Length: 559
Image (cartoon, rainbow, N blue to C red; front, side, top):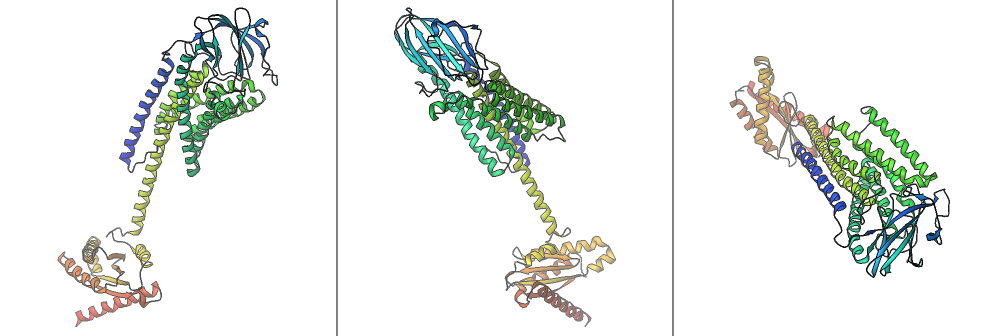
């Protein structure tokens, strides 16, 4: 999922491309979520069971939570408007009528986060015709995959349903409903497919960013991987994947992972947007305060487990507000990563606030509030993957720019500014790679002082440039000319081509004189690598032979 680009223009294009992709993908995912929550069931509609809630016992710590009422129909308890989200033992009494003899399914709408439940069905004579149990905390196999649905065959008539729910806490209000089994089996496919698809996204991206965090040793990917892992565990537990597939029956898998992943998300945002105490003082201190509050919530959830899901709501609200505020603030400062993150957090904010604020979904039976949260996080995970991909492309661009700058610096360090030939430093480095049969030739250019003194240094520089250009041309591509400084040059030959070097020098002098430097000339001296014990002796030997050649030329001119 990482995008790599090789130059500035391409990276600019990549940024616009990813920005567009973020916007389009966000709209598509948002539309999909709305569609999923609004599509009506094609088969027979479920039947709500009209009734009232009664409080049997509020949550009070280490109580006997698994003890159901033996005969709930004839016992009176205080009425309750709804189930308290901080847990307890509740009884729902309702009546319904059956017109067709067939198999029916009792299930709950709004939420699947129920620790224990029991449906008891009574006929008109008050006889119990069915007793159906289940819940996340029950080691009872669910007959319908990822659902609390319980099947019973009923004949036409009027019935009374007494449903008991016992849970440490509730994510939303579990309202019993009835549906014929054929329609029910068709209706639950949508929600189950959505669950498995979103969890697959979490699993794949979570592993990917965990590996990235390990290989790159970066906090951004590590915190992101923890955030995904926490949501994977939470949604797997709340939507019955852990209990159905892995036989893990604990309500605490629904709350504790969210409390930890919310802290990881806060750290992720701080690292992603590079919020620090020096440049973003207010945001940084706000983030620290929120992290301290989240740590306190985690500790309190261990002492008061019935408040754990409420603390989860508060933490989600806190990191959503912080992420949105940070994205807006840094986008105003033209932070490119913040601009892209703003799209992701905006969609996540809207969906997330809906998920943590709702306790009921009206006219929606096969999808839960847990599904709303699941889709919200899935949207965020996918969009943030693109945000991180943009960040990777930025890092790639910065790396290439640094390498290019390093290459330019190295070129400058190894090159002569006037002639663009390799300099003395490059010459010494090249000497270390010379074979025994290679040769080194020193060249001393005559006439430089004459042109400097009579025509100025600009003319002397022109002589050096003319000599360097023509000599390298005649040497060809396999021999390299070095400028050692002043009027001193050198040629290295790995194959010991002394004759080629000297012939090229003669042609160069002729060309330089044709360029208007009639008083120029050159002396050369060569030495084979095997003639000396070390580089110093080799250079001394070539230098001596060059001066011998220079004296011989001067003597010939004098004579």
